[in-house]
Length: 117
Length: 117
View 1 (tube, each protein chain N blue to C red):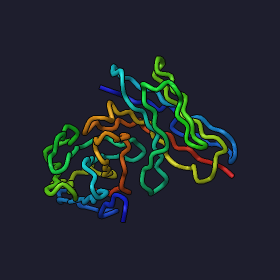
View 2: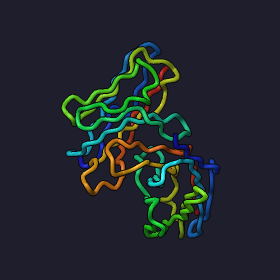
View 3: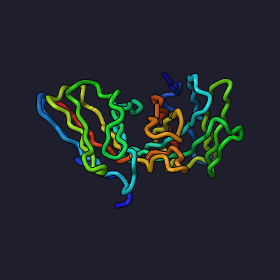
């Protein structure tokens, strides 16, 4: 079974600064997908960024980028130029194979990120 | 609307009551998932539908939990004889399903928060 671990229950960062959220996972699969989802207070969860394990290049989406270390089974999220709207719970998640029906997401426990003005 | 819609948003039940939670996925989405999210935790998988077929119910915690999607669109999660440990947010998510272009992204609703007294 796959497990996802987020070791930082809470983080804070000053507006405009950079913050990195950590995630490690355990799997015996060779191909899989990793995701970071954002859950603002009382709002729905949305996808921030995804990474396919067979791609060596780290994914980037505007101010969001990942550091994917496959051998170390590490998948951290870097948020640059933090904004107040980035305040949310962030979940790291694993999916065995997105190219099959019904492969479920396995989530970490989450990291609460607070951006301060 | 264009997103995943869940109702009710909030439900308070007395211990022993039955509850029904509804999910209206994005039109045309083949895959539908239910997750349970305890306070301050990551979502945990409950069950999965591909169209009207329930292909995975391995996450349902007991036989008091029942889900259906009779016409392959709207889904209902029913909890019979609710217990205090059932208190959680119940999230519904949908995805287009594998069609050669599936990114693995799940689209979540805002959730139904159940409180059992």
